[in-house]
Length: 580
Image 1 (cartoon, one colour):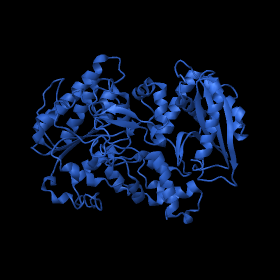
Image 2 (tube, one colour; image 1 turned 180 degrees about the horizontal axis):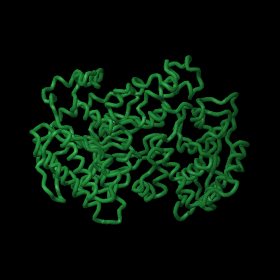
Image 3 (spheres, one colour; image 1 turned 180 degrees about the vertical axis):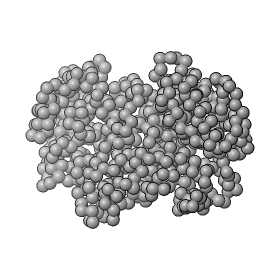
């Protein structure tokens, strides 16, 4: 049994190089079965995935495969020994090589460039360096517009080039906020010229694989190379990036045992399969839910979040993926250009509908439908299939938040916007809110909630329906107490409007919306009866106290006008796992 420090050293962390990972004995989630499938497709391929899902490691693995195959070399075993592809690769004579493997990372090339010309120069210099290392003689000419890639292809035999391009769209996003209107088109022109060679000199290539975050149609980047096949939503490759629950169980068994011990406060030697399953269920809620499969059959965890989770000595659930990269400005605009009710509905678990054409054929980054961009960058995911027999509507699909991690991250972002429009919490508000819950004082809690609601700019965030009230309180309570609040919690007999844990109390609230003050008493009794009839809160992992309330918001007075404690149950001790 490994110690925690030994377990942590087995994790690749931020290391993306396949050869380095394998040579140093780190955990590698075997995706090589997909590589054999890719290599048999006689067409250039494009795969888009959000950042930190394993694209770069995938490209690095392809590089090693085409450079050295699966046989031992340089006096050591093949790095593919024991992996799925080992018995498959030698069976294909097309894979004998040798190949000129040109691996270009456009993100690395663009990161220090301040102009399109600088990027083109860096690209040409890297290709020239590759030609020198490969002992290829290029017929060079002195020209500012020199296309070194074309010269390289002229110098090699047919079927000998393996082209691997990682983050093809990085140069476009790098200059997206530029004040120079010509910059984006100039960059698109450079990329267009580069990929035109993939089509015009198709006979030179054994294999071409391109990755990126965004998928663009009408920038014409791939127009000249329109033989490129987009496999981003192909069901066959739904789990090519990210990690499945089964893969976590297979490759991280000891990490799961250690994390289960920490999370459930169980001695390591007493951890059983049930404890691990309990942890996996919570990990699924936090980090699973990403679907890139048009049939909707495959879901994956965010690989980066899983690695970060296992690196925590004192196991805790957190927004690892989001915190590692924050929110680029273009995505911030997408999020905050949508209306407040739409944003809250997403956080409440609802989905947004987009047409199939808008999803599959986006134009430029600047004109792409915001929800589509949020999907491509990993903030939303497919909630329904749009192909296959299970597709409810093949002309459109639903996108929504994939898991608790993204729900938590987006909640924090929206909270910042909420406070920006309410000038923050008034002095003493947070202390009053905590005290109201600790003492189970329904009147004090009503006053706190009304203080939140009255601080909202009614013109920007009109509370015209029940969902607007509950979602606004959800934002306020989340930020004030730094806790996870659940809207519309599904239980056996219905959905509780608002539910959260604070200290030793689980709070469950049923809201009703009254248009007139005269309707409040009747609606309050309806809410009380609903809580009792449906036993809201009984199936939640309860704390020592379960405090259930009924509340009525009145549009006429713009406040919660009626409140009643339905029941306050106390238990001998807190139930459920410790708060994560």
